[in-house]
Image (tube, rainbow, N blue to C red; front, side):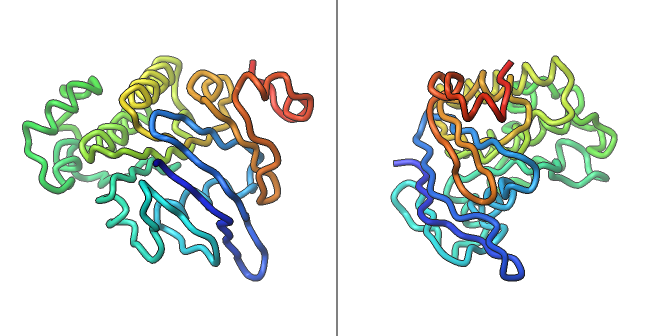
Length: 227
């Protein structure tokens, strides 16, 4: 069993931001699309434990995550790629990744080689490009051996080469059984990686289906272009 979200609701100042149900199975990429302000990032922050929902249930691998803090969800295999890259800008790449518990320098260097950044291990994080920092974010998920990836706009501000690299990383993780929940406005890349797409509008799932189902759906076509 992967991720199951049941009747999950988040309210700010009396206004309901979302109330949703969704699932992500191991080896599946479930993409959430929708306009700015639809509640996608808030939903993701709730799933990973950065925000507390007012009602509903989040179940991961058959276990409820109720009242479980962010750090403990990380220990349960939940990895989060936020809109803004994480890390300490004045520390080196190597120092940033050695923050991951129970990880050796050799472990970090193996992963840095995998993400093609071993030559930058002694560079300060703050001087890296956006694409390089995204690679560090993925390196952190790999070091944590995360079984669920929650990716908030992984393709944002990436150049063509970095975008292709990110697509490849997502597809490789999927092939290894990682459950992946992703949101992004880059619909061409969403189509490349997703098995299922759900539209979140005004805090509710408006439509959900496979990529093939949605590209022939008139309601989806009216709102989104997958070209």
